[in-house]
Image (cartoon, rainbow, N blue to C red; front, side):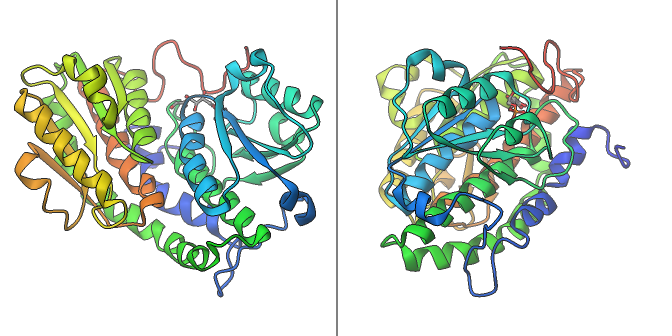
Length: 369
Ligand code: F6R
């Protein structure tokens, strides 16, 4: 039941700190070591993996795009991410040393299921990341890492997405641990940072009133653009997807570095542009480049909605609206940066009179190809 919330979506957004904590529970021990015995692929096999391919659809695909950064950084194994609906029609190159990661909240998405069947026929091992016990995708996979988001009722995925990210980080760190990569020390640190992330999500949720107010003030707009870089790029794509499906608005996500290659032509007076800013501490080069992007679009009249870390003062002069998120390690930032975008889409859709739990034309699980 909705437990007093106006919608399942609002309830599920609010449940995210718990969903994140539950997905970590029992998988990290006190010394910062991962124990993922439930992933029944022998360490010997994982050491031989020479390529990871992530397949998924929609929001789960965005989790996969973020997983690529984590997997390649912590394991140095090449990782591809592909829309499940495109995968098998391309005759992809797969063999026994390929690890395919299939991400699905429902575990019943036909496109993802067909992609994993194709992968197994070619001899690849398939690890499912799934939120639904005993569903088809985990049953047909070699192994499964369950997300512990609890049942997700609203059609738009929120808490499942955050737990998919956590599961992706765990898989990446576990692969790094098993293979003993040179990022060993960093892995211990990240595991500790992950343990604090549920509290960071909680803090973001406590500061969402101005985001709601902003969303309501933009209800009459036709278009919203989203920009990000590095792991902020998939976050921008996810923000745009949420707005499309809930508010039925034209929303598009771009890699901020691509602006000058075309999208900047879209900028006009008072166009809302949401910018996800990377940490000024981690990849500071990217941070500075994105601050220049914000300046450029603002000079052309955009209304800038800036999502930036606490303490990032460089963005202040160029932000028409500033949304603060807690400082996190770069790769983990999507866990906190996505939350304001979910709240934004939900509130904007409500202001437009839309039914947020049951957006038009959409179904919770898509069991046709
Ligand atoms: C977006 C959304 C969809 C699903 C996609 C995959 O909010 O809910 O894009 O993410 O249909 O569904 P699962 O994860 O069940 O395979």
